[in-house]
Image 1 (cartoon, rainbow over the protein chains, first blue to last red):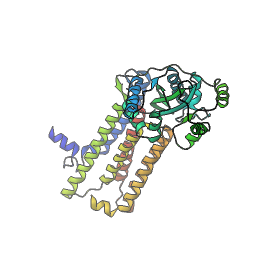
Image 2 (cartoon, rainbow over the protein chains, first blue to last red):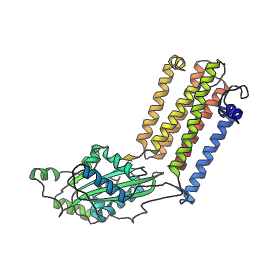
Image 3 (cartoon, rainbow over the protein chains, first blue to last red):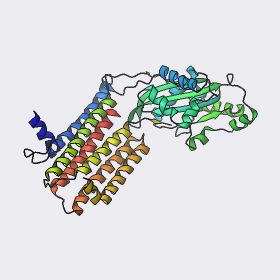
Length: 314
Length: 88
């Protein structure tokens, strides 16, 4: 057994001083395996989503608890879950999936406020936080808290209500979990704004925030502006049905595939480094590629996997 | 290893630039999967060319080495394909 492992992983006379795993035939087998396994996983995901799929532990209850926990830690009152804001969040999530965009404002110019007003929530203050690719609630909240603009939204004293949506689907070919947080205060609940604040808030527009790379926050539009927007947007607005909030397939495709890929890459990197050390110590002359190049390349592949599976917030 | 790295520092700096650009553009291409695939494929092709060219310039290029770089490049691509098809 040990003899086989040495033969497979270390340069020996038996493998012509090149670990067997690094021979073209074995590398070719790995290539065939990964291409075939990719196709097989894709077919299984499509036909048996209950067996293999994107698993999300992001729950609305947990998001609400964690948001209020953060607010409490910062001396702010809790937000109450508002059904209309949740409907608006679902509408926004489904709109992003159906139109294939990832932004606060859709390519056709639909702002988050369209969804909020469409759900019947008449706001004085409103804001939106978005997250994508996270698989649990605390990661979502931590990511938002780590970003100043999102944190400001979450910890704003202007809001009294919140609505969440966790929408799973394909965004431009990427199977992902979108989390939408809509924050707001109704006209009735809002505390009277100071005169100087009002003058600023009347001018505030989502588009200006968006272009500056900020999280959209809209404050106290005047009634005329609001009523115009209401009549214009009510035709466009469609609120989709609430999707299942917690998707739990038997195997989480993301974790499964990334673990296999990481293990394979780590083994290859280890064998290349071991090969390099042994050959240098034994001072054996070989005409092969530079192991260092391959180690760096496999490091790149590892980095790319991290990038591809990382979550994003806007 | 360090001796080799210092001897070929310019080549490795070029490789690091190729890899860095590949990773950064992949981040910015998100969530456009097609663009990400194109960027990653380009980075892999550049790596294979870089490897072959590096050996060619040092007069140590053989068919075996060319095949090795091609196979390692393909291995990287197959793993990324596996991640895209399975996990994303």
